[in-house]
Amino acid sequence: MTPQALPLWLDIAVSVLVLAGAAIAFLGSLGLLRLKTYFERVHAPAIIATLGCWCIMHATLVYFSVMGDGLALHALLIALFVAVTVPVTNIFLMRAALFRARRTGENVPPNLSRTADDHVRDF
Amino acid sequence: MTSPILSWALPIALFLLVAAMVLCLARLLRGPAAQDRVLALDCMYLNGMLLMLALGIYYGSANYFEAAMLIALLGFASSTAMAKFLLRGEVIE
Image (cartoon, rainbow over all chains, first blue to last red; front, side, top):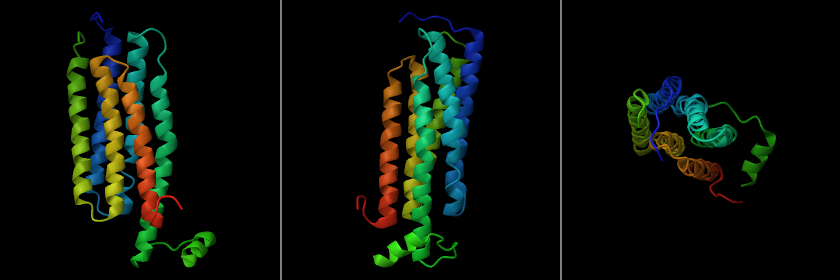
């Protein structure tokens, strides 16, 4: 692969997008480390999955579209996949945390779903 | 790499992403409850995936895309399985 100079606008755009994405990932992880309770902490990584992921995805998309041949949309696949799967994982984790908090008798909102109650009673 | 700004920005971004993974690792080791550890592992998967994408730009190679896609897939599967385990005590009922 022959080294070729990037156009200046591409240089600036990719740099800004990658730096913004990495800074957002750092801030989200910092929030995960320093927030006090679990129900505060669960919100912190959401910014990585949305803004951070989309910033770095756009940097990849723009870079490979200009440097390679033709439009390179494969990075979009990752961002769409993350956008679909991260809410599923987070809802599961929140439900698990609420379930465990109720088990230990902490002061959390009561269960509103009847079927879940019946299911728990069956066990 | 012949780009003046990107050759400065990319190492900084890679350093920030690795630092983010270290912060997640600290939460993973410290986390008081099991759900904290699962959340930290999920966050580490996301950071690792972003690190792979940034490395792809750094080396100018599209091969890193497959690694990032695999990390995203395995991260989703493992985090969901562990959350399911925390919820019910077994993964497949």
